[in-house]
Length: 365
Image (cartoon, rainbow, N blue to C red; front, top):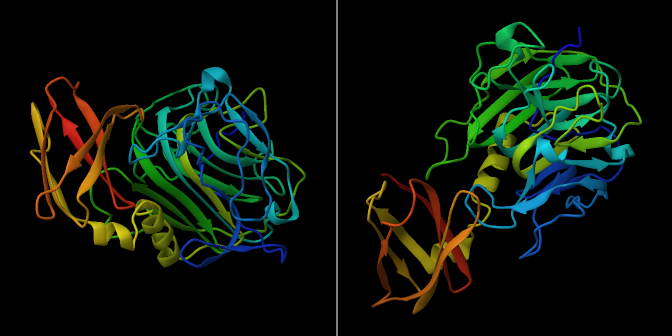
């Protein structure tokens, strides 16, 4: 039986001494990073760049398009669709040939788990045969809860899993499930002796008070190398393609096992990537109420600017409202009619003096 593979939402790291760069925030040994940003107004995407500076750019993409990130900001994620056989291919390189350690991480929203044979949803993959030299991947799978039954499918029991060459880390039935339709920070870190899996939700207004792996397990073994492409959103095997359907906001690889504090730093950087010192200075004490809203949503904040632009996006990243608003004595108070909005989750974006701040709100019916 073809063994079901583990989902990993992260990218890998190598022990080669070729180009390795700092991830934002000063975390070293980043060998590839895909922030999934596209130019404003872009729809179809024809190239995905490695912004780490290591040159691991895509050479082939298939049916991917620009989407909104977990804040609802457009052109900050890439959309994949199994029905369109979406995927990204990156040629192998010295930096992608990890040998002893790896960290794979991603920010993803799974809209529909892969329901084909062996039910794995691929975030990242290198190689076509599991547990062989150079093979690594991060996927989501329901395998741990159905004893690797390749013909049983349950969309409510998928977990992150990882493989690192001859070492592997999956079949952990007691870790939490990742639901469809929700943004998650997912990571797998392997330091040559231990593997850790992270599944951290990104939706909501606050950060996780305690950042910790959902599972830790002793694992050992070398990773080796192979000449296969690195693929994102699919496995290059016609019988087991493991298509990804949903959105990816970030994918990154490191050639070592990041510590818990380092991964916490990556998570907090990604969570607050649109914030800056200017945000704090120009937009402060921003609150919305009532939340959830029915007919009216009120916004209030302090601004170091006389005007601001207010925008509202739905969960698909479509802009529903764009309006210029003015302040009185540095205070903004605004009431928005929500009576015509369907029930759902929305993102309010406020821009003032070059600063940007976003906040989610819910409409109930």
